[in-house]
Image 1 (cartoon, protein in one colour):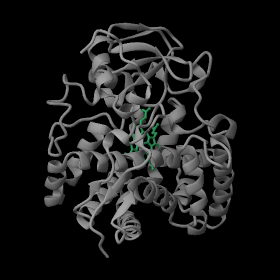
Image 2 (image 1 turned 90 degrees about the vertical axis):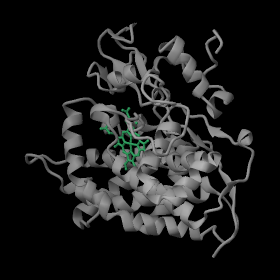
Image 3 (image 1 turned 45 degrees about the vertical axis):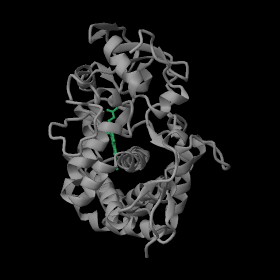
Image 4 (image 1 turned 90 degrees about the horizontal axis):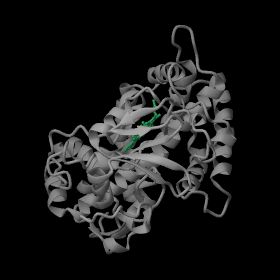
Length: 401
Ligand code: HEM
């Protein structure tokens, strides 16, 4: 390992950030750097520090706590969707999280399992006879958006609009029909109207559940319900695309592990956790801001400074995980931080697990001889700050009906 600090946020870094994270963990575990947007922020890369920072109440999620407020959270400000869970602190966070948890329960997710299976099979039907596919565009991308639309109660005829808006958000506004902010606005207007409709004619979907949910006589306001539906879409979409995309990619790069999983589907739950630890979709947890001077890993962080907890680095920390750079689908002691930690721990983890296990398990069962159809060095990674995921995942296999 060199004594030089690694180049962060370059193209090489996007395709394999792990050597740079190893360097940071070792030499500068709490490191102040300039992000591509020009904002200065602290990166926290060791597991113990990361876990502590994620649960530290002095680190606020409210972006207005950052003096220059240049965090560039795409489009949300203009669309007035600021009141969502990832941008607020207690007591508001506690109240909203309690309300949404009444509507979005583990049972809601368990009952949704047959629908996720049906969607997964339908998508595989779409390419199985061809013998080749791009698993991002034809599988990992559509599955979560249709799943979350169904769960929320977005009618089937409107789901392709959502697919377009979500596509725009994931490609960071470089598409033909306007930018991220415009897509967010359209989505917001649509959700506001859908909430009106569901108030008049409730169904057994999650939006109706959000409207109905009450805690000590309190309900979500219409704005809060719209922001909640939006964050469920926003937080649950690109993450799951990348869980499936990165997960399948890593299995194709580790054929012995892939065969082991195909032969023993009961390994799916620990396998999906290990894929999350090894190459998870969320590279950095979302923004946090110091509300008071504080110390992390011996570094003094002044009040007002942004802190980014690097989940991908913490989850490869040799101080916490044995052989952290080895993909071991049967790993037992695997308390990874891929879903975060503390009060903002991922609300959608049960749904993400259901989608990840169904997608990966069904793909291995129905297309057992799946192979990568590109040189890994040629694959392009999306270079967003928070997410880590492939742009395309070309595969080939024996065509089947
Ligand atoms: C929060 C990861 C899927 C909804 C989080 C956080 C992480 C995360 C790391 C915490 C962020 C922070 O502390 O800054 C993931 C991963 C997923 C996934 C890796 C897929 C593999 C989903 C899904 C949904 C969802 C499917 C919903 C349908 C949320 C929400 C929050 C959240 C609402 C905010 C919770 C709060 O602030 O109280 N997620 N997520 N996520 N996630 Fe997920």
